[in-house]
Length: 600
Image (cartoon, helix red, strand yellow):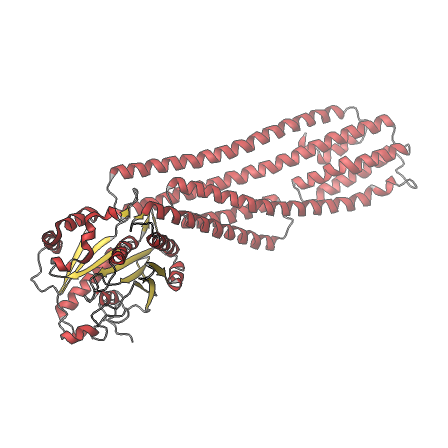
C-alpha cells in the first residue's frame, strides 16, 4: 500500500531492503549484495541518515515518515522488535544535490540481544551515518538511555581521522514527550542525561559540538492502534504531534550533510566500499570492536583510485578510437595531437571529479593515471607511425619505379649523370608534393638514400655512366643527407612529444587547482575549526602543488636534454653536408634543395 503522510512531507516511492544481517551463532555480520548494487549505482554525494534507539519506540515509523509515508519499513507489533540488522530504503531520494539513504537499525536493548552485537551495531551506525537519529523515551531516565552510555568514550571504539570529522550530526528524538516544552530542548536533554549518566552527557558535549533535540508528544491514538501506525491516517493523529513530526523531519532534512571522507564527499560506490571495510573489520575475531577510520579510509581511497584510473583510461581510449575511426589512419601528427588533447582533457576532467584522498595522494594518482594514458597513447602513435611510413613508402616506391628504376636497367640505362640526376630530382619533387608531411616521410627518404640511391650510384658506376671519384662523392653526400634526415625526423618527433607533455601538464595543473578548490569548499562545509588541523591541510596542499610542478619540470628537462643532443647531431651532419656541396660538380645541389634544404 501507499499510506502517504500528506502534503507537509514529500512522498517518496520505494520499499525497504535488507542492508546487513547478524548471524548470532557465527557472530558475523553479512551484507546483502543487492543493497550494495543499489549503492554502487549512485554517482551523487550520499547523505546517510541512520535511525537508532530502543525497540518499540516508533523508530521504524519515523524512518517511514522521512519518506512522507506511514508504511514502508516494517513496524514491530510484538514484544520483540521487527528490524533485524540494518534495513535500507531501496530508492535513495535526491535532496539538494545529495542522495539521501535512510537506514533503519535494529532496536537496541531488545530482550534477547547479544550485547557485543548491540555495541557493534551502535558503532557501525555511528561511523556510517552523516545524520545519527537517536530515538529515546522522552523521560530520559536511567532505563531509557539505551546505548548512549557508549558516548562516554567513543575513541575506545573509533579511532578518528585527524583531518576530518567522522562523527555524524546527532539528532535526539524524545518520544511521547508529555511535559510542557522547555525553552531549549538541548539543555533539557543534557540536564536529564547528566542525572542519568553524566559521563555520557559529557561525551555528547565533547564529540557533538552541534546537535538537535526534538520532543514528539504522544500520537493521540488508542493504545492498540500504536501497533499499527503504518495503517493510520494522518488525520486521525493529534494535531500537535503531526506539527512536531513535520518540524523534526524538515529540521533533519534541512541540515543533512553528505558523508565525508577527508576533504571529499562520498559517492555511492565509495560509501559501499567503506561499509564493506568497516564490516570486515568488525567481523575480525581478533578485533575488539574497534574501527580505525584512517585505515578504512586509506583502503577506500586506494580502491577508488584504482577504479577511477581504470574507468578514465577507458574514457580516453574510447574517445580516441571514435575520433580515429572518423579520420582513419594515417593522419598528420598535428591532427593526432588535437585528438589526443581532446581525449586527455575529457578523461582528466572525469578523473579529477572522481578521485579522492589527501592532496599528495591525489598528485600521485594523477601521475599514475598520466603514465597509464601515455602507454595507451604510445600504442596508438605506433599504429599511426606505421600507417604513415607504409603510406609514404608505397608512394615513394611507385614514384621511384616511374622515374628512376628503368634508367638503372643494363639494357637501357641513363645515358649520363645529368639524366640520372634529373630523374632523381623529379622523384624527390613529386615525393615532397605527395607524401603526408611527417617524420615518417623523412625516414622513408632517409631509407631510400641509404639503400636505393646507393644501389643506383653503384650500378651506374659499374656500367660506366658515373666515374668512381664522382660516385664516391655522391655516396658520401647521400650518407650525410640520410643522417641529417634521420636526426630531423627524431627531432620533430621529440618536439611534438614535448608540446603534448606541456599541454597535458597544464591540464593536470588546472584540474588539480579545481580539485583543491572543491576540497576547500567541502572542508568549509564540515565546519572544522581546529586551526592546527587546517594548518596541516594547507601545508599538505602546498607540498602537493610542488610535487606536481617538480614532476612536470623533471619530465620536460629530460625531453629538452634529448632535444639538445639531437640538435648537436644535426649540426654535425649539416656541417659535413655543407662541406660536400662544393665538391659535387652538378645537379646534387638541386637535389639537395628538395628534401634537405629545409634543414640547412
